[in-house]
Image (cartoon, rainbow, N blue to C red; front, side, top):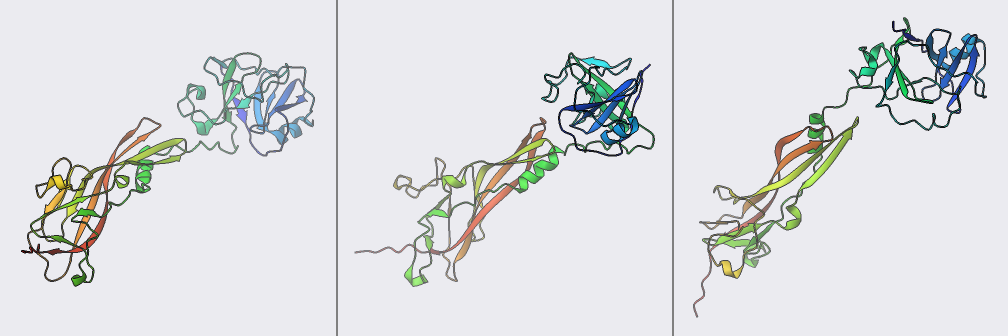
Length: 322
């Protein structure tokens, strides 16, 4: 029959050293400084109480010298585990009699076999890894004791992914085109221009066309969202349909002439001049967004768009005959 270890947590005191002990009649109390909880062993039972309460109840002050008795709890079904954690510095090199039952911290996940079918709200899990294999034992909270607050559940990776997406710092496209975006006409107050019935090429520089990532971590869950450029979109601003190109575009060369863009080029032909003022065009980059996590979960998120606009005139090509 499994003997239940009762917990009555009332107060906490500061201690030094890995453990300290005090005789308790025919039993003995051991204090774990990691949790500041005393584990008291009588002839046939184990109880877990606060360090200050254990010494007050037993009528002894904690002693700094180690006891010669080894604290082995008399629990019929304490389970030996082969997957126990490595001994902690507080337990290494302890002489017999200095071993103590300690509270597993952080607590095992709900459903872990060490809970022996109980909920984390019902108590705590103790362990003893001194001078041999590690033993685990569930300890139930005593009636009227402060309830054991289970650790909060880990955050949802999908929620962190949305946060990471919102933190992506994606660059705007550059305003580069041919005829040169820096062309200026003094007759138009120095405003830039392009030509009617001529292919106007557009592209963005390499620094604005590269994947960007952001990682968000909370509660042991880490999520990385990555934005990847997938297309360059040019809205000519004259009422025509936007042009979508599957890449960043490229600069015009003399070899291209006035042929439609090829080999990764991107462009548009304006069919009319702008006699009543400049038009405003917009260059956009569409970004796909994907996420991964250290839990194995992952997926895709709604795409993002960055854009930049510029105003210019569309002028008639002037032919000079000599």
